[in-house]
Image 1: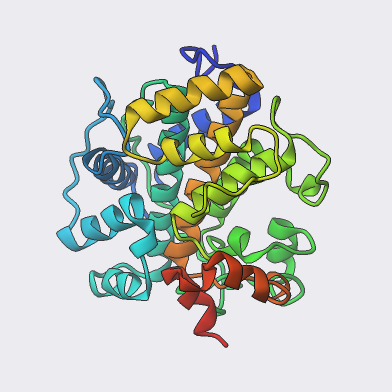
Image 2: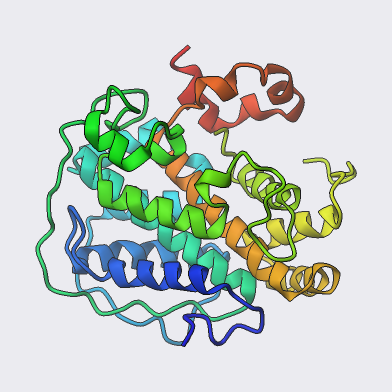
Length: 238
Length: 100
């Protein structure tokens, strides 16, 4: 059964599957956070959007976190989730001051961004927000790629080939723009980012094929109108 | 933003309304925009537009959150466009300009 079987609008199977996979991985231990910690982060993100009027509170939000995040970290999550235009280097510095190391910070940015993504989709199609799954036991992998180096972002990133080496070739192919490389210090989150991108926007090998229509009922120019408007409202220069 | 400008894209006005409403705080406006979009472009376009809006809600947060600059190939050659659209005034522009 589709993850969005309750939608009155048809949702492609690959898109529904990609979203279902994200909700499932939220509940598992990540690279740096436990399942319980990840649930606390995404719960804070969702609640901040509800408090900001951008989401409607569901009757059943699913699992409830039992991890208390420090207030400094909660403030950072709230800013990113509900007011991304205000997130800047000062906010990142506050994250470091709160004790978050760069890969932990990147994982936090990833899952906050992903849960907002999934909730926006639900809101757009008029379905209830998907309930969070109970966190699973397990230990974070703590995989830290040595290839990640200081470049131009707040956190280290894996350069494109050849500087990024074999791992860069595996993750990126010959090249990826910075928006795709941004989360590369946490390769699992990079992979999730790519999976969502391909399901929701366009298959990456087709990105320069402006005649290719990834979504039924929408041409590529129509897709770009939606993308541009959202990013303008979020004051996203990139 | 300048809603009076023609996007040059079929149903561009409806897509703009939907994109703004999906990340806005007015549920009634979203419901209205969704219905109008479905009537104009078909029901699959609603999930398509929702997916795109969701995707860029993700990307905007990743970009601003990680502080990435615009790639050189895009930055070069867009000076006029950025000026016309007022993009240089965005707070997140500092993530690019601090490297210049």
